[in-house]
Length: 196
Image 1 (cartoon, rainbow, N blue to C red):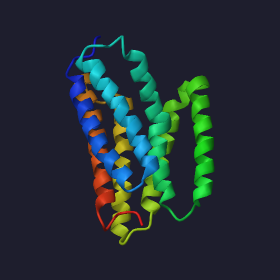
Image 2 (cartoon, one colour):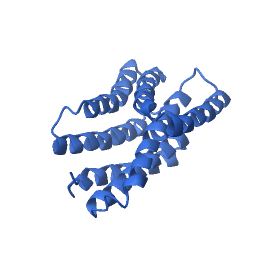
Image 3 (cartoon, one colour):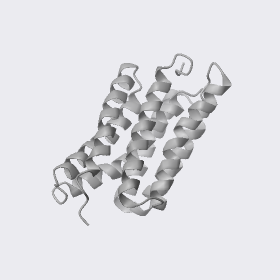
Image 4 (cartoon, rainbow, N blue to C red):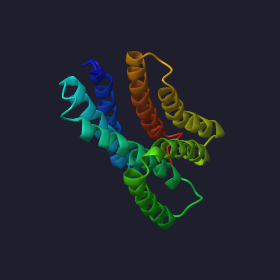
């Protein structure tokens, strides 16, 4: 089955949201999150070109490559930004851990692709935990932060279960990703919930 052209629409929404989030994260020096969002946005951009211009075979490899990079590097980089904002780890330890994670991810990419989904889900769970643990001015903002991060995990699991019809499921999954990126950015922009 050849994917329909309208698949590009929700991908474009992710591209636009990624640009907004990337600019904000870069401005406030959330470097890990910036790089993670850049990978996600690039993946969505390639998908929008692939589906929008019916270049299915021509862009299949590069799109699938960046889709894998999003799961192995994009998601972990965003999570690492949350870990970085906690008081439990010092910066040098995070840098060393990031290097180790990068090496492991490269190994998985080439030698253990069956583990990609498991690794992505694990990172999303870690993200929920650490987004909650970040000190906030009020405890309710910690719950709010954890809830926002959990949206992407729920969305990912729904996508993997193929709960919805193909066309609706495609757009639902990608629209929720765009909403998640936007909500994270709004969360960081709010003076009551901004990471200190």
